[in-house]
Length: 511
Image (cartoon, rainbow, N blue to C red; front, side, top):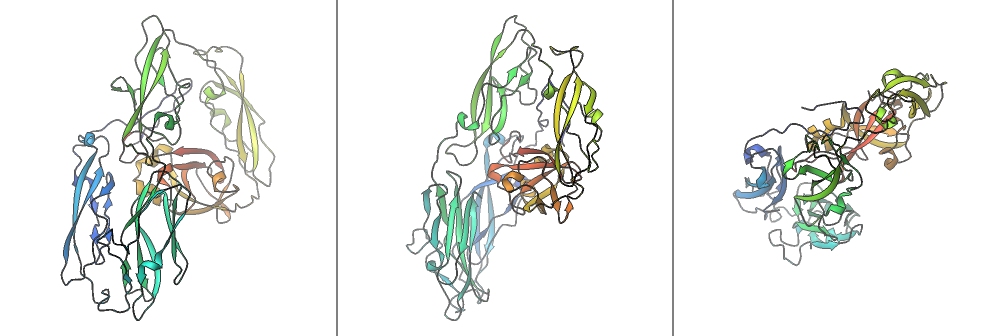
């Protein structure tokens, strides 16, 4: 369930969903499904419904070349989501067992001379013929591996293709195979420091009937350091506490994830109030911002960062300005009419706007609408004073728009940005399936530009003023950095952009 509350300036409100106790988190709660081990020893890691898999005891088994199945077990370490009674334990261990099938005659190199073979040993990571681990690699520094050198083709059939498959670890590590014949290489690199990912190679004969798997190997980047308060981008000069105890949080970077806000030992993440200052003099209040530690650092869990505030003994009044008016961006039709401008002012009283409309245009055109607003009758230093003038930018769609050429993918539409994080993590990342183009010059601009126009085929995208997750590739987002969302009108015009991040299995709020 999500809650939408409209709050008018000068009051600022940040809400989280009511805390709900969910009982004890167990392996049954995690709901691991579809675990298996194939005859070559490759582990197909299970799907998980609740929590997140953060480690496992085994990454691969030896080939079952015998005549009977072998029972195989892997224990998965799973992070416990917040609001369970045992969330303080952080993790639980959940074993999974599967009977590994034996190789069929067609899969067995001793019986099928078309099968490729791996030169090393999947069960012995120290074998000299195995793919070596790559440790301490600098970011943006590609490493190459001669994939073909670790495999031998069958007597009667060549190797038709190679694949590289991720066993576990960060998706920020990329592994790409290129080349043909005896010149097949895998290029591995990452743009993120202190991350690890585990892979293995697979060779397939030309008919596709027989496969061979290498040992699993790891790739780790250098630059490991502890996550510190300075990394959160917190600004100690912003934020304030009103006389009545209302807390206006300090700002921090989009990449930082706030777990909770503490006043002493009390969690005020929801109330955002420290109580009124009735002492008769100003006082100092220290708040603790508890941040989740992201991947790519030597520490994990959370860190505490204190910020001091002065709480006045007398409530200060602010000057009513355009930001306080909370003006919704009005939509301009392709005929130049400004829709419903009189009800776009959130606080204060709408007086007039200019111009009253625009001429039609053949291309999408930025427009400025000037609102005249009367301040509220009380609560501000300029209450009862002169009207203020506020400019608002919008885009008028052209009658014959030029179709965009930058390719993007969009998710389904959401009423509110906060609703996105109510989905399962896999649903968010796999949901960007609507292929579209934009008039933005490139993808980086498309993630940030208000006024660009989105097309599906040759028609403007009918956005219904909903929010859409944007991705460079279909069903492929970078979870390490969060994601960006666009609010799109019925004419395909981007009216607003936002950056967001969901904290799955780690607790806290989404930014």
